[in-house]
Length: 258
Image (tube, rainbow, N blue to C red; front, side, top):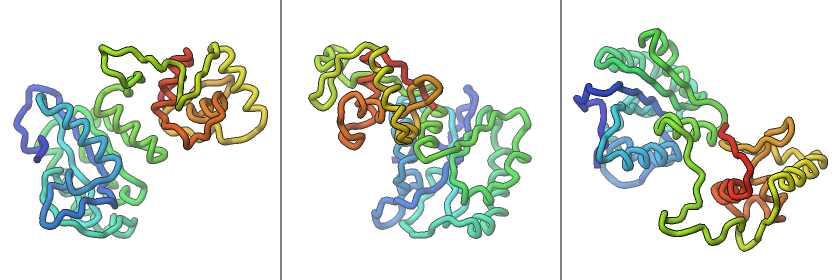
């Protein structure tokens, strides 16, 4: 299946441009596959899910992938399975070809938004990109940890953070409210914060291990999973971030997006 790409002729809506790095993880199917299918890393999960949800109304967006093997390619370019990891040296070698392709992309269409989601080793390959596109183009660059970059990619694609819900069909009620992994939590918001304040006094820095979501406790930003662990006695590995967000939301605790 091919996704909507640069070949799209829809010019009725503002166009967006996404530059995303290839991934070490790839599908091992023999022969050729579209690049967006061949690469199978976390960022491609996020991207493909978004495109599937928009299948009835394809987004006005072009996707190009920065590949250690092929340079800057369209998401629909057919590529084989291969094993070549990006390094700063390889990125420098690819630089001229990547910049040339970026100029072709910029000349082919007027973009309103651009998002760059690549790692540090990829940066030399696109050095100077800011001089290619118009000065008024809104350019965002993903930064931070992998989880943080995935969150930023999600928010840029959808235009908003994901909603925290009980993951139940709309016609069902969340019959296990205030419960996680069989443990009931019956605390008021203030009691939850009191538990957090007490745990912070221990000086353990595990509360800082958050990527996409956090809870404000005094002057600290704490990890939702850490907080739920303090409330329940469960290890942070015993439940998912989504479960933690749902429980905290049910308890009346405000969870914020990084």
